[in-house]
Image (cartoon, rainbow, N blue to C red):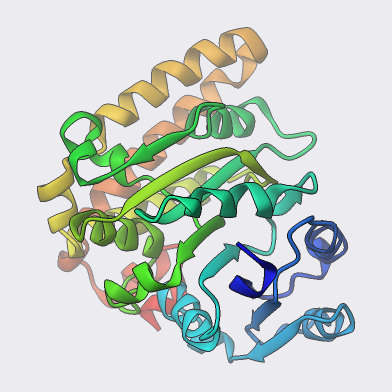
Length: 305
């Protein structure tokens, strides 16, 4: 795969606090993409100007027009000459100089439609934050397909385009990203790819620094949005099963990890688990809620605007 085949797409909004590390991480890569496309939601902190100064291409949209699926689809349609589309979020910092090269290497297999990399916890991450990354992003590579749902269930479509790449042909063959979902555009795209016969890969050698120290309220709102996604895209659970088994494994793993690395965090972790559970259950019943209440409860508020 040559540099002409690869373009990077990053949605941004007020990304100045991440910019120095993000830009340096991109520019240090051994695989230099043909273009870095920044889709900026009219940042007020100079993000667009810094991106242009670093030689990146900037597309501007209004904050009200941002949509997790629609904005990424805009990037895919703009990158018409690329074979591989690498997506990053503004706070996912490439780790090492071969992050892009290692990720793109997965596409040497013509059956791979998408691949995602390993997310490492930020420096000074709390034990709760660190465990979440260690649990979801192991050191072992995995290739998944439609058949994998029989053994892995919902985990077979786990994917993150905080640092993930798509074969443009595969993405467009399933209609691209959905623009009418609250978020989870990556999960939905991978599910459709598996149904269409494409495979997806997890590439642990491709790494970024990316983790979140969510508050209890943010955990609730995030899982409310996940519940909304699963309610509105009910075929995901029907065809790939539920994520309840994985949730139980996560809680047990988290308890064991915290017992070793920070027992005093256990009460906070249990509170977060309850918040996630309640948020998800309420999100699954969002059709019964008033629009104004959904706007208050969710994390992606622009979806309800």
